[in-house]
Image (cartoon, rainbow, N blue to C red; front, side, top):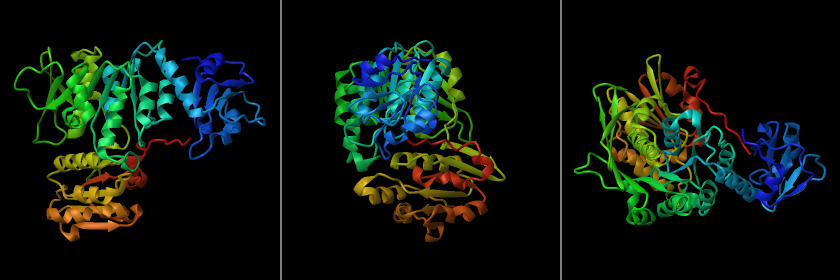
Length: 472
């Protein structure tokens, strides 16, 4: 456990203590309800003003509070700074620089969590710290960094998620990653980021604005964006992942991967084969997963190799991977199969899940339960219609579209030959309960987090699946 002295926190944050705590600080919390004894409560001004919950944090055992506004009616020691969030990042950055292990930053429009989880497994779970749950934003990143413990951790894997322009450069400075993985670039959070080109530029800033980054790994399709191509052209510390078997030995800045699957049975053995410069090709057994997840696994394997993990260790650990809650899990029971992938959704992840589901259950009657995709900006209807035109529905299949945005899928679906009587448009998720309960076959649940489609699962399947969500 890391211990933080009060004088150091004041120095790192540029703040002044109003009554210094008698004891050192042992942790940090942005949620007064989740405070543990010894924590410093960080009073962030967000949807709710954290300063209103300082008393609650004190009652729960906080040793102090990081504040912008000193509260004289509260007895808890307070470290007063000009900007709480900025000070929080400064503290996290200084602590990160004291960590002598290797830090990996993971970003991308989708697939960050699965890539982070796979890499954490490959690096060795006992000596690796990684982002918990969805703590990947401007609040989650410093919380993650402040859990680094150099006495037991050799590696750290940190997700970096953004939804506004300019956010990534701050995260990059705080994380200061030694190695960066970019999973993919696609339309996501366009309400705040504007265009896919802006997304690419922001994601690239994770490695371009950090002076500690030694290696960058990203898939070939990122090269269509200027910053990625420029980075590749520089040749230094870049590995581009290409799909397929190479025609000759890979160059120093490229790697290749391919997949072999026993297609005559669902959930059969799957082999991931990789080629790297200066190394013999090797094959790994992996769990059955979607094309997007397979590519994420390949990226994670390459990163593990770069960080010195042996192929033998990787081959032993990779088959143990299982998706985290709500991100691509399959449940079987009572004559039905349920594929749950509804933690979030954008066009790329939506199509990847649908294609995987269709392939896995090609010989069974299928029910597609689809909700809308959020934060896609002014072109959101077009994204839904275009995606609908890529979904292939069998003649015995059924599609449930939940909400106004999901209803836009119908326009695209009709262009693929899907009949009107195969499409059910519903206003609320609850309206789908009876259809789901009566359907016999395979059922997919995919949509943005706000729809909480997991509530349509039968109780026996969902009992251990829901994640605890915290609010600041």
